[in-house]
Each structure stands twice: as C-alpha cells, then as structure tokens.
Amino acid sequence: MKIAVILGTRPEIIKMAPIIRLAHNRPDLDYFILHTGQHYGYEMDKTFFEELELPQPKYNLGIGGQPYRKQIGYMVNAIMQILNQEKPDVALVQGDTVSVLAGALAANKLRIPIGHHEAGLRSHDLTMLEETNRIITDHIADYLFAPTPDAYKNLIDEGLTDKKVVLSGNTVVDALNQNIKIAEKKASILKKLNLTSKEYLVATAHRAENVDNEKRLYGILKGLYLVARDLKLPIIYPIHPRTLKNIKNFNFKIPPGVRLTKPLGYLEFLQLEAHAKLIITDSGGLQEEACILKVPCVTLRDNTERPETVAAQINILAGANPEKILACAWKMISEDKVWINPFGDGRAAERILNSLNDKLNNKNI
Ligand code: UD1
Ligand code: UDP
Image (cartoon, rainbow, N blue to C red):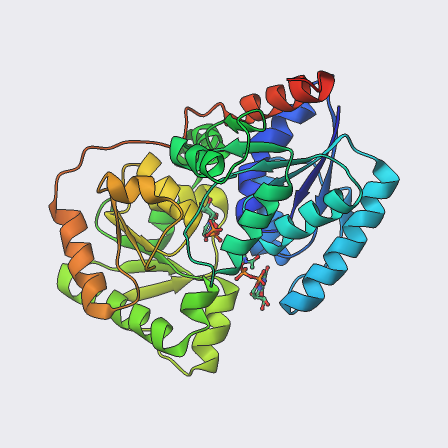
C-alpha cells in the first residue's frame, strides 16, 4: 500500500506524526509526505519535523501566506500533478484546513481513494471555512476515521455508510502520550519564563473569525486582561503570526498581565500546557490537549466541533465577551471536575493504518 500523506499546517504535522512514524517502520507500507507549505518557517513548521523526528517532505508546494482563492487553486493543481506522477493507493488528509480540502479535491478528481482522519467533527456553523472544508472532505472521502463516538454519529446521521466509517480515536492522544515524558525531561519552558507550576495560565487565539475581527480581538484581549488582574496570575500567550499581524494592524496594546512569546515548539508547549492552571483558547487541538492533560479550558468561541468536553463540563464556551471570559475563568478554576478523555486510547494511528491496509487489500470490507 502506498500512502500520500498530505499536510500543510502545524496541527496537521503534529497529528499526522504518529501515523508517519508508524508507516516509516512498517516494511509492508510505502508512503511519502506532500507538504503544501501553508505553514512555513521554523516556528510554525520545521521545528515540528525536528522535534518529532519526521522525515522531510518529498514535496513542498511553498504556498504559505497567500490569499485563500490563490492557495486553493494552486494547491489543487499542484497536488494533482504530484498524485498523478506518484499514483498512491490512498491520499490521507487530517482535519479541516485549506490544505485538507485541496488534497481531497485533487485526489477525488483523479479517482484516488481518500482517507480522512478527524472526520465527522461539526460546529454546525457554516460561516467557518473549516466547517465547509470538513463537510466536503467527509462526503468525498472513501475511508473516514472518526475520533469520537459523537463524530461517528454525525457521519452516520448524514447518511454515510458504516462500511466507510471507523471509530479510530484521535492521534492527538498518540502524539501527546509519545511526547509528554520527553517534554518533561527535555523542555525547560517554566524555568525559561520563570514560572511555577499551576501559578500561571496559557492563552492562544488564532481563528479568523476572532482575530481578523477588530471587535472580537479587542474583547479577547480585554478578557485576558480582566482574568490576569482578578486571578492575580500571569497569562502566557505564544502568539500565532496571524494574530500578531492583526494586533499591529488594529494598533492594540498587549494588556498588563499578558506575556507574549513567539510560537513554541511542541515539547515546550506541551510542558507549558501540562503545568497551567487554566487554558484559554480558540484552538481545536488545545481543547483536546487540555482535556487529556486534565487542565480546565475556557474556549473563546460561540460554538465548538468538540462538544464532548463541554458536555462533561471540563471545557466552557465564553465567546469573545470580556466579562463572560472572566466569569468562565472563575467557574472553571473553582469547580471540581470528573475528567473524561473522549479522544481515544493513544492507538489511533495503528487503527488507521491497519484499517486502510485491510480495506485496500480487500475492497469488500
Ligand atoms: C490555519 C487553518 C486553521 C487552523 C490553523 C492552525 C485554514 C483556513 N485555516 O489558520 O483552520 O486552525 O491553520 O494554526 O486552513 N502566517 C505566517 N507564518 C506561517 C503561517 C501563517 O506568517 O507559518 C501568517 C500569514 O500572514 C498568513 C496568516 O498567518 O497569511 C494566516 O495563515 P493561514 O495558513 O492562511 O491560516 P491560519 O490562521 O494559520
Ligand atoms: N502548539 C505548539 N506551539 C504553540 C501553540 C500550539 O506546538 O505555540 C501545538 C499544540 O500543542 C497543538 C497544536 O499546536 O497540538 C494546535 O495548533 P493550532 O492551535 O495552531 O491549530 P488548531 O488545533 O486550532 O487547528
């Protein structure tokens, strides 16, 4: 079986890493990495290949930093050319980014089977580009890997057959399990930033609907200010380049109590998350990691495609309203919690590869 692993952004590299590492060590599998270059540079891209000891991509389209319409057109065209040349048995994509949709559309056009890891997530908010990306990808994919029972149910409810859908778990757990001990041994971010375990908060925000919107970004920064002031704890904010650019464009000041850092490597970031008292974020991956690491989470969105953690009351939706962010932060640090991890047992990569192998070798399964 030959797999085209198509990826383009930070979370895709992290979540594909367990699959790539496993495929690399299996003599029955052939694979290559096709990087769209949507994320680029050391902090958003190369550091993850180094830290996770991944082989270099065979192809890199270098299409980062371009407007959406330019990216999608160029990516589909270039991916088609590569897939046509490589003739893989399956094109594997992960998540809901532009790179995912482009990879899926290119494979679909060439009638190459598509595998979609993290299938079935739904925010039910079609104003999010990611929601349309994931719906389209799911409905043209041949092998759907749903991370949670909720995601599995969404796919079946939309009429996809259970022959196509596998409940695999999410490789975010595999990646975290494989790296948390290494992070605790090797990373020294607490020392570097002069922090004490459980006496600081971590924040991240990068979603277009938050940080491209002046009012919402202002609300989030004001919310972080109120939280740092009232909880009397510093907030460490490794900032996404998109957000930094918008803070400058809107002429906003970083509020007292909020400490910006550049985007961190995965090991340092895992260590920072694990020792935080609270995580405040609009990131999908952070909502998952907070729950696995048993750190309460406040989500800076009005909806989430990861509703399991909200139902279990270990995550709460605060939107971008400063007072609501503060009230949610107090609530999350004050209440006792029953921790659940709906994202799997850390063997998702193995399940995905075994399932692809079985299905491709026996088309009737
Ligand atoms: C993308 C995904 C989002 C995902 C996020 C993970 C889409 C539509 N969005 O958002 O779903 O949650 O990645 O982080 O696919 N930039 C840099 N350096 C980089 C990457 C980006 O400077 O390495 C800047 C550029 O100015 C770029 C902007 O950030 O134009 C936005 O980057 P883009 O990849 O379009 O979207 P993200 O916000 O990163
Ligand atoms: N991450 C990281 N360094 C950072 C911020 C995040 O390594 O400074 C990791 C984090 O551990 C998670 C992933 O990046 O695995 C989440 O990526 P992001 O928030 O950019 O995207 P999303 O998950 O929202 O698509």
